Image (cartoon, rainbow, N blue to C red; front, side, top):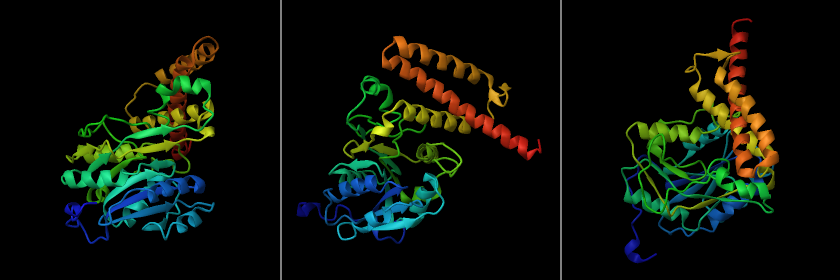
Length: 333
């Protein structure tokens, strides 16, 4: 870095801290995958005068995750935190409490970050000191061999199941309720992040299959009046494995989306049948029949769409029925 650039990252700390940036990763029993992620962090180009740290939260792993983290001690400013309560929101909140940085940059344990990823965020923090939220592009990386039905349906799946995200090459504002980054690649100023915690009832905690904890937080931050920006040069790849490129996994993913939506919308639907909105039963049956028939006569993008809609309805019904049973038990029924 040129001498004229020295001092670009000087700051006035928001609190007593040791780092400008905390890179936070939450992981559960994915030692091989998280090693790949940390290796990509070690390969980044980071200016000598950029204070940063890597914080890996062990979410009660039973594999060799701790050994993987320890193996990078001489190569990265890395440390480990432990969160015994499983669930991504619990692990994220542990990272928030432990982070030393003025900004928390989040990525996942199945991501490969670009060589200029951290520098792109650091420059964005300097360019927009008033902003609280940032996000960058996510490109899915698929495991070979890719099934034919999958490659033909990839456009339908890449921005949902596989977390693809790209708002273009311009630094556009982020928007509540719409233009939001995804979990594998976003950043939040620590002051706001400590005010807006992750909801433990989202984030794949034991006993539930809901997701979207990061979208919930980002939306609430922006609705509070804060602003945010898209950082098009902060690029990552989101890696999948062969087990995720299956119909079973696709159906399971969309079922979690349906369950999450039902959780967030619960109480707004008045016309119920066995504790479930009546239209949802119809969607469940109709989409299942369409999926079964069209899989025999139509190209994959057609029947995968109906599998998606069937699984979504099934996940929502699963949530409503579970809630109804809880109410019955509470009433002694």
